Image 1 (cartoon, rainbow, N blue to C red):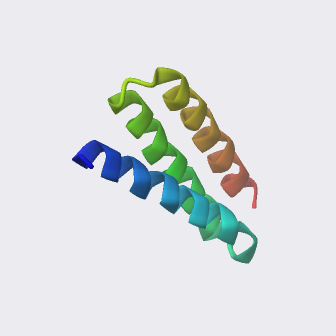
Image 2: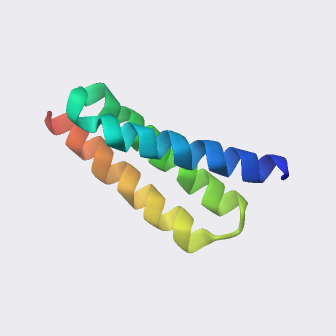
Length: 69
């Protein structure tokens, strides 16, 4: 497993954990937004730009949700 794959696994795992914990505190919503952004970066670095775009969009949605809480 190379470094890029490890980064992708860590980013997606972090994102999923933050999503699972969102109901506990608004900081987890912010963490989810950061996780989506990290996953988006992974998508672009891996050359999978549709994944990068979708995750970038979800990071904006999560950030907007965080700001409304």
